[in-house]
Length: 379
Length: 246
Image 1 (cartoon, each protein chain N blue to C red):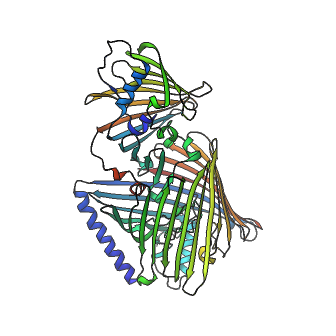
Image 2 (cartoon, rainbow over the protein chains, first blue to last red):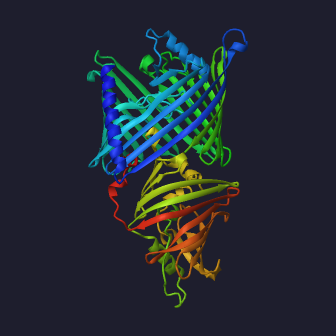
Image 3 (cartoon, chains in turn green, purple):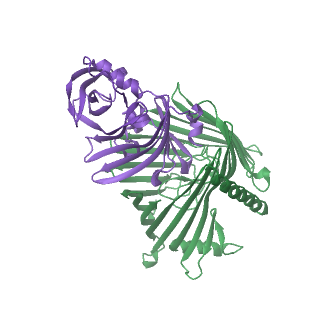
């Protein structure tokens, strides 16, 4: 931990002291952000149906982005502060209370949680989404700091994405950032290479990978190959990904983990998307060969080590300003599925309103559901 | 439609020999085509989408090398950092938050670019008009106070985005002032109107163009060049997939 903290401090200092001289040069300085407010009414099955099954939670969030650019260098930071009220805040505080080392504030899922003691149902959730410096080194480029390293093709499942953990807790799948050093460069106009290192306090425990990718013009296929090492788990990594178009777009990924003890685990994803008039459809299948580590938690429920998952979505462009979408994420082994229905409205310039109904359904019926409204304003 | 994407500079050579004998359709198109060509361009643009009475504004910076290589980055708050790379007939889109590059292909090509009335298919057109269409002069008339040649264009290949076009070309400046775009069935699909023409150097350029999609109710997209630089040095290395995610 001490090593991580020192590393983070050095990185932060490099970016801070790097950014301001850059801004003072001929380059530019940008300030942007997003404010959002979400209110949700939730139901969670707990024995007999009574008032305690229902709860309310709200999130008011402000994400700020700062960018400074100079000749051949850029720095960027993105920070999000979320004030959580209601049941989500209580759940986080309950989680902290279970910790053998209770502290305040405390860390959860890569964020810092600050209980607001004056409000028992309120916590401040602080996330550093991005903090990186980019340097052009001839044709190559170095990116150092917290960043999203996207090596995958899948929308919901992406086993080849060895640095960016998939977050399926929101309405749209998202990639989590990694603290990494990334050196990349071109291979002609249509390809490139990447060397990525995400070291830990003990470097041997870090994750390291090299990837080459290209779009093969003659065949109309995008493809990539990766080789790497996951030191924490003691695995050697080999991955491949591809995408091509035949009217519908087809994509696939495969990851092989070969452990120091000689065990091999293979995971794969296959998917496609296509459209028909105002409808856009996508479907993905994921075969998890990595046990609990590769399992997909449905709606925040800790996953078992299921092998087979499915994701499907159908979007309908209802008009120029509204899109209705239905999606479902299914754990085929456990018989669990998480359906979602959402209506996204382009409310006004730079503002979107999203209404969503989500649930978790098992063999015993609906175990939880939530109806949420979110307003988002970009500036 | 390529004028929307790559150039917005469908300009005509100024001061042509209008007083002489009426030119043929091929000559008119050749002049229009010839004036669209440039070695490079950099511009800042503003796209105003009016849909069912509601207005959305998108802003962008763009650079292009010839008609085959273009790079656009959107700068308005909702789309900040979203980029497009065009290489020949291929198009990629980059989403910065996810570090995600998506090739626009197949069914996606029929969608409107950033919600506008310009489809990705149209944005990818890079052949000159005379390569895609056979043309005949239908007459000469006044159009919004300007003398124009009226041309009827018929697609040489079935793969053309539009089967037929009616163009009104400024008879003095050789700028296309309006275009009616038709489907094979004869149905009017889109109309474009040049709202403002500016003399840049020795060339007249349309700097404000309106496009309306007749299949969408109360829909129009206005594209304006806020600033423009022509034939400036541009590093060809900027037009690569590796640079798209930079």
